[in-house]
Length: 407
Image (cartoon, rainbow, N blue to C red):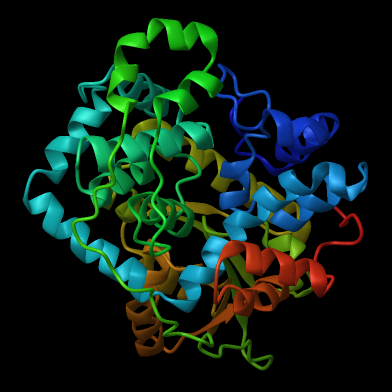
């Protein structure tokens, strides 16, 4: 199993991985069928069926920290990427603009070739096939793939990032986009990732290596390809727009696919007149999500709906919508709601809709209050530099979870 679309099963997946966590530092780079050396929890973490803190605390409760530091560190890479992009949202906007320009060229045809596993290299075709069929790739394989795409094939990094975002169940606007930028040499000036034959031969499963041997020659003597070197991206959004719940207004709760465990947040202690769970099929269509990924998202949304119904003791219907504003306004009017509370989404396609969504709600006499998880606000300012500065600051300030959350 790659990752369950249900919270309870994800919690069990954490428990099942705990005995293996101490070996993660030694085994994590090996790319083997089934990927037993890694937790495969990234889709659940990406959509917050479980949080980084829950995963880290569960592992740290059973191991001496130095034995599992590498695993815990890797868990927080995802939160670092989100924090980094939240401080610099223009990087996401620039990516979308560049992608649109790329797609007017041959970007779409390149992505289609990736979907058909027809990219001209047996190693890369193998991973393209695995990605399309399972919605997952080992992180080391992702790095090899991106390095080949950019530096050997010299294809636009934006189209490669779009291909991954389209198929990965854990496809995250921050982690995916910024990782591709890093491989290209754009994220950290002067640092480029190159996939070398010796590295593949060391970490690729022997049977796979033998069957894909003819593709290894492409990884000999790679040369960086940096067509457009870029300066470091500046911080342009040091603080998030203020938003708060107005206690005097009749309020409904909106749960979306960016954060599927609302009951574990401060919202879990509040009462609501009504609850709705939505999936944004217009976004899924825009980015070309395949049926398997859409089905996984629908299952995860349905799980959130069932948990919300149980927690708040009221019906929490799931609506898959192409017109989010109309869906929310209609729901609010049916329940005499004048305020919608929701968890703030990170930078990405849903967050892009919020300015126009807030305007539409205001015009309908409905206030939208975006609620932040305190931990997100606590870690966000630490992402002004590189990850290891972020990580060392977390440790120095005692910001790693020191107890097992009530999960």
